[in-house]
Each structure stands twice: as structure tokens, then as C-alpha cells.
Length: 101
Image 1 (cartoon, rainbow, N blue to C red):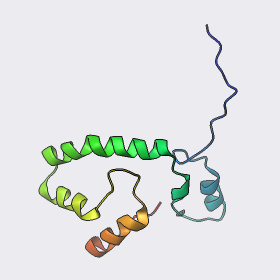
Image 2 (cartoon, rainbow, N blue to C red; image 1 turned 135 degrees about the horizontal axis):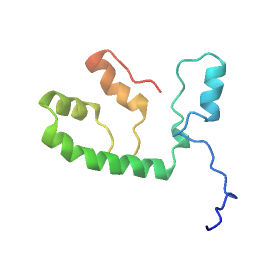
Image 3 (tube, one colour; image 1 turned 180 degrees about the vertical axis):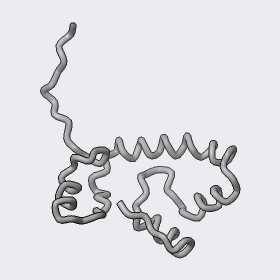
């Protein structure tokens, strides 16, 4: 069997519950965190681009008109992970709800 290279440590990031900013919020009893947008990597944005590009034609084909209208109303960016503050600017007036990280 080939040897496994373990010299490169995987750093906790935005796709894990073991991120320091999450642990700190939990230690202070906070239910929500701020969205650490500056920590999103180009890889995170690329994953969003691929997901959005894959889902959009499916929504157009299979989703009902109310869902499609809702997606359009949110003005989600196709090229980067959405900032929740931006999403909430559209979501809150329409629904009275807001997204929280």
C-alpha cells in the first residue's frame, strides 16, 4: 500500500463545526454567529457557482411559480456565496423573516 501523506494539516474552515469562531460563539452561549464572509475561499465561491449553475435549470424546469418568484426576489448572486445581509435586504420586506448563520 502506498504511504499516506499526513504532513499537510487540514485547517478548520467554513464547512465544519470545528471552526474557532463557532466554538467561541458557543462558549458565550450565542445561538447565532456573524457570517465570516472574509473567510470564504475561492474554492467556496467556486462550489457555490457550480451548485447555482446546476440548480437554476432544475428550478426553471421543476419548481412551482411561487418558488421561482421567491428565488428571483432574493437576487442571489450566481458568482459568489451570498452575503446574508444582502439576502435579508430582500427577504425581510417580503416575508418578515431573516436568515441567520
